[in-house]
Structures are given as C-alpha cells and as structure tokens.
Image (cartoon, rainbow, N blue to C red; front, side, top):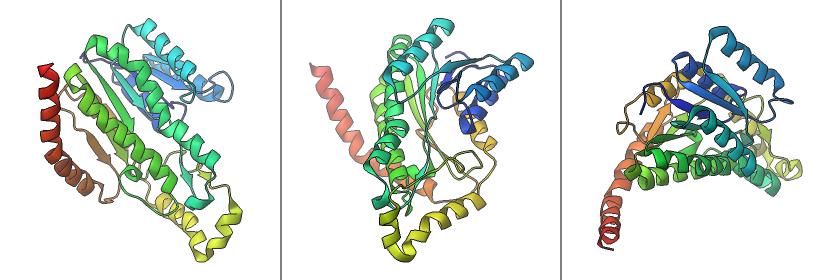
Length: 292
C-alpha cells in the first residue's frame, strides 16, 4: 500500500469525521470527505472544509453521501475512484447517539438508528469492496464506541447498533484477510464532539414517565459522560497511526479513551475466547474448501 493513501470518510461535516479529514490531509493523505447535503444543510461545513483545503493546499475533496441511501453511497464511491483511481481506506464514521429507556424508543427511531449506524457501513463497504478486492489491498475502518463492548442503562439501542457494527467488522476481518484487506475497529470513549449536543432522545415520554426514579438515569448518564469527555484529537491521532501502520500489522480492535472503562479487558478476553474455537473451525472450513 502506498505511504500516501486515498481515504474516504463518512460523516465528515463535524465531529470525529471533520477531525479525521483535517488530520489525515495534513499528513499528505488524499481525503474524500463525504457528508449529506453539502449544498444545503451542510453548506457551511462543506465551505469551511474547501476553504481550509485551498488555504493550506490540502488534498481534500468534498463529496455528497447519505449513508442511508444505496444510490448516494455508490455515486460517491464511483466519483472518488474516478478521480483518484483507487480507495485505500474507508472510514465508516457516520452515526449518531440515541439515549433513553429502551421501552421508550419507538420502532421508527430504532430503525433510523440502525439504518445509519449499522446499515450505513454495510452499504459503504459493499460499494468499496469490489475496488479493494481488485487491487488486493485496503482497510475497512469502523468507528465504533466503548458502547460497542459494554452496555449501559438508557443506551441499549445505541449499544445494539455498535455491537452489530463490531460483529460485522470482525466477520470482515476473517473473510477478507486472504485478499489482503484488513478490517479494524476503533472504540472511542467519551470525547467532546457534537454527538453530545445532537443526541436523539427516546420519543415515547408517556412510557418513560411510568418508570419512577429510573427515568432519571438517561440525564444523569449524559451528564456523567459529558463531565469526563476528553480531547477528540486523541482519536484522530490514533486513526492516523492505525492507517500508517504497515499492512498485516494492524490489530482488530483499538480502544481510545480518556478513562479506563474495562474495554481493554473485554477485548483481551474476547480475543482469547474467540481464537480457541475459531482456530479449529476455520481450519476445517479452509481444508474443506481446498479439497473441492
């Protein structure tokens, strides 16, 4: 893989995505910063990115992409490949938080959350993988969360979306390794990004009101997370380091956090437990495939 890579980032208008865009481009990587509606609701954000790119002569290109729309995803990927000739890294960053008691989250809210946080990555990876498989190299990076490894009350649906993303990403790591494609997961803890201000609340207030003192958990947890939030540049620096790690040397999971939340221990145990039955099962599978 080239030292200067072509990187496509979803959800680049603000937050982590914006930081990833600036940090990687300043290190010489060619970045396709994608976002919804850069000519409308995100016009200001898109303009700021273009102005920065021009001012500092950074290799940044803004593309429209709505990760909940198959055609929009395909158009953006096709445009990036047409301009750069390849995509070396895709960063599945687009997503949002939803908090509230699980029963108070409506079916419609749950569907929208999964459509963005989980199916968005499915769409993007499906669009990118044919190109990566042809070049027999590439990195699928999935921006998960500490909430993708442990569950907190009032975050059940958000945790579910990140648990699903992690399962998908780990499956890719097994399926694509033989083709030179790596799948990695980044698990940020609490950081100061717009995600706190843009958190969606469970809509069924009538059900929430029946929970007594338990209904206070979402607000208290939000306050606790906000009070411990760190500098999000730490995550951007970690992403840069991962991308610049030589092929074949990347880990599956990276936990990046200002606070110890037990995620490293979960990851270590998971790796140990997963590898024991997996080795025998994968070995039998490959043996059967090769015999055909």
